[in-house]
Length: 413
Image 1 (cartoon, rainbow, N blue to C red):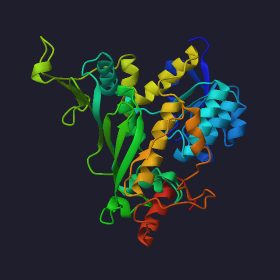
Image 2: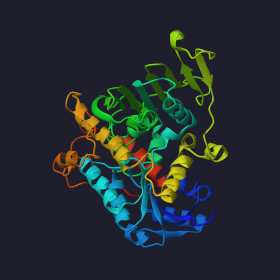
Image 3: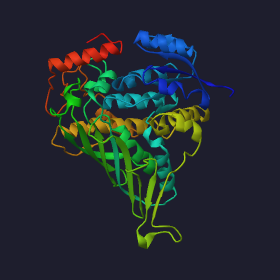
Image 4: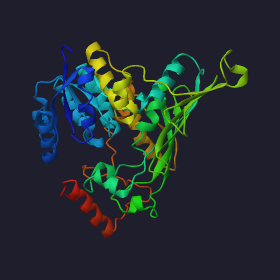
């Protein structure tokens, strides 16, 4: 393909999933960046691309776009710096870590006029893309109620291996913050956004060995209830409950569609009640949809094909000069919904607004809102990451953590 988009990737752990799909969508990987130098050099040697440990030096490389796969809570400052350096940006979850960062990120995209894509991959499973198509064609009528789930338990060894260090974000991020995998598919299918949120947390479980043998300091999981901008209600569940999987259900006023929970979870269930069932069609249809494009490439990608489609749509947006569907405003909305959900949890699950930063006037109240649980931020208003307060770790758990981290080549605290 001519005129390939030259791209650099920050973060060589999660970032590997963006390096592999680059060429098929017309992007050329030219540079990578990470502070873990040994791992960076191994990946660089394997791929034959330039390697940088300094992000600002990395930005001087001759490239068109940057993919941010660094830590969850560090994306905004990196994205803003890359935009002002003239690079298009695709950012992993979350788009921002505070509401003030959300304001700054929206304004940086507006000021530079460059492409920003939020790399939320769950809307791009074959089932979720089919539900979006059906909804847009009016198959189930107007959106009234939805559910999204992202349940991801793991043994302590697996959790520790991907969260090296006591202050790694996966060890302290509050339960509501990692909400985009459950919320994004509903937003993408129905093209609605949350305007209000209530949240309820299931506390840290001192009888669960997958928790007490790790270094996590946050709660088991949560239920978040959103009021959407069309008055629909959405319930999202995510966390470390048993029963790994993801699920989406969309109720319209003319029908229902949902992913299948049993057997082949790549199937879709479409249902119409008898008096509204389209003539000549069965009341219930269960089938396995295909990807709308690039089926073979998508089937090889992670997260149900989502890792391919984020790259695909990012490249399409750069070539067309038009912002993608998962633009900065939707990315920020999904991210600050989790922040406001934690505020709700700490305030007896009261309803709180999810501001719309497309509205410039709405930004002013939140421009300096730096409310954050990050243990390394200079923040006198820092709050606990669990509804139970600070979570203690046993000497046995700490010794086990250091053992697993050493196996990954990490020797820090």
